[in-house]
Length: 438
Image (cartoon, rainbow, N blue to C red; front, side, top):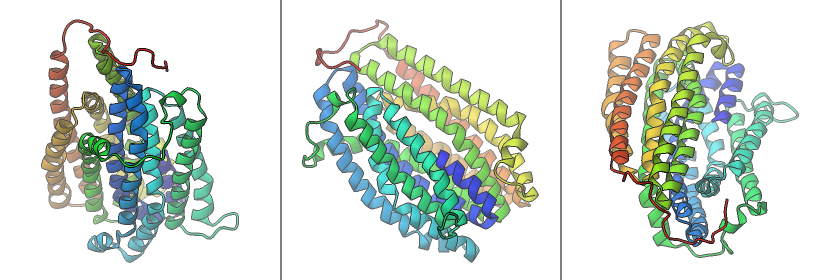
């Protein structure tokens, strides 16, 4: 997501048309990426419970199958992203914006298979509670994207000046760097070695792959359709003009920045809850839920305070154009409200997934976003509003209504899950008691 922030800032300094083109392209390929991310997160859930129950052989066996699944998914979403020209033609965009957006997405398409492989490796280590390989690879990939963007967008250091397309190629290159780094770290780490298979040259086990898909598809479709709503509203806003679209992309990017720490703590909470479920320690489940939710809410509250206190300073990092700034100022205030509510929803959803309860969050998302937010966004943004600024603000108000409903339903479900746990602390489940410690 940091890469998306850099892309937005650097493209915004290049031209408003390129910023709008990247905003449209980003909102089209991001749901594809998140669909695969959600599917691969099932690996983290499975590994976390196996780790808590000390089923080491099961942990070793699942990694090659996760990589097989990653290769299959990458072979699907890469070409799909490349062939997005017909969708752009339906949107009736300005020709220059449509051409730049397609060039950007076609470049990114070459990097998407690498992202899925990266997530397969990341989710395996995450289930163990080891996040350093993921952090190191992510940070280095992010840092590499900055000079690559500068070189390919602006045509520096002998490279061609490609604008939005250059941003896409920089993103694709950094996407391939990340799995190379995390793979090297994993295979050189003595700490992770006990949890790696003795050989990766194994045939696909369709039973294991099917298990990952049954658990992961609801997560993947939750992410896909959740971000799909943002994509849909982004495409609505694109019809309101370049300035409205650029302002929305900045506001959406600000939300992305805060969303990352929210889901990071949520993901960490889910891993700890999964360990406790696997070992049968019910008191530890409740402790992890309370602690993780508290931290997530604190991040949300602090972020909201910062956005409300200094919106102009934040917006100035993206653009200096007065028309875009005026619309964005209003949107950032709505983003602040959205974030503080979303912090509770994020934590609850991840904890439910740790219980392997993946279908309920999916159904809630369908109801809240597609049943409430999207029709309301169309009404407030496209029918009631009389100008682009009011239309964009109305669409964000509809998103807030959806997140309120989702938070209430997720909280109710989680309360029922925790209330059903036995009062006793529980005992460790039988398993491989001489398994390596992490």
